[in-house]
Length: 208
Image: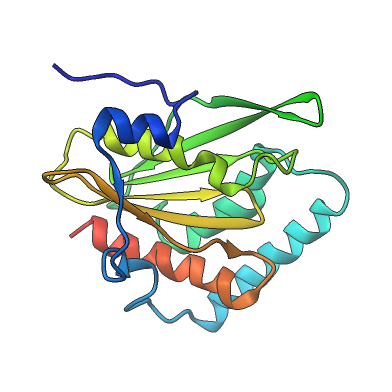
C-alpha cells in the first residue's frame, strides 16, 4: 500500500523514521553539483549579472516575496538552463504554508513548488524571517522526491530563497539516501554562476 505523506509539516526526523531515509556522507554520492559542469558563455554570465543586480536592487527596498523571487531570480535561471524548451516540461504544485515562532511572534511564509520532467523539484521559499533560511524547505523537498513514482532513477531538488541555493540528490534503490550541496549565494559571482552550471548539468542528466 502506498503511503501518502503531507509535505506541509514533515520533518527530517519523521522522514528518517517512516522511510528509513539516510543522509549519504560519501564524497562521490553527489558529484553532479561539482564535477563536469558546463562552462558558461559570456552572454550567460552577463545575464546572471543582470539578474543579480535586479535582485540586489529590489531586496534593498523590502523582503522579497516568493513571487518576486520567481520572476527576478528563478525564471532567468530556468530560461538560461533551457527548461522552457523541449524536451522539458514544467508543472506547478500546490503551495505549502510554513510558520515559525520568532521572538514570540508567529511568522508565516510559503513554499512554491515546480516539477521538471518528474526528476527535478524546485522549491521557492518566501523568507521574511531568519527562521526561514533555505534549509527550512529541505524536508518538504525530500518528501516530494520520495513520493516520485519512478524510484529507479536519481531525483534532484533545488531549494532557493532568492539569496541562497541548495541542490539535493535522492536515490531510492534498496534504501532511500540523500545528499545536499553547500549553500550557494547569489552575492558571490562564482557561486551564482555555479548554480546555472549545475542546472544545465542536471538538465543533461534527467533527459538521458
